[in-house]
Figure 1 (tube, rainbow, N blue to C red):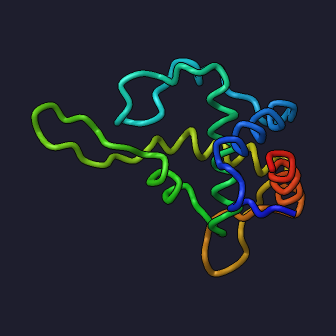
Figure 2 (cartoon, rainbow, N blue to C red):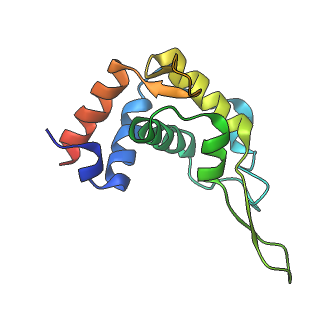
Figure 3 (cartoon, rainbow, N blue to C red):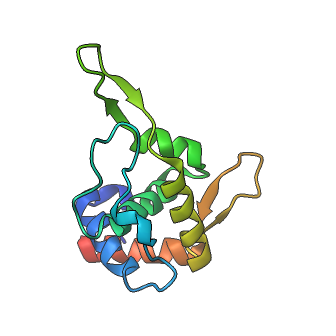
Length: 139
């Protein structure tokens, strides 16, 4: 069985996004088509299914790095903020979107809150099966 690290991440994320579209608990809210993903963005995402792509990327990131919280995911999905003539600086992504996706993934049963000392969310056996199945399909 191929490991998640061995397959192409882009193909895995797209395949996971297609699978997550079938889940009724993962639905973008009505405001998702008009909202920016962070202060560093100038416009909302142009892709129609960006919600599922980001949710699948978050699920993959949680699977690979263990207990991950909202704050760490905000840092990962942030990017450079254009400050005009001044040098660009890193800005975190919006927390509401990430928090809502984590809640939806938790409601679907793919992730759960960690009971260890380190706070955050980890993948459940159901989430691990889904990721491994998609990695095998990509391979």
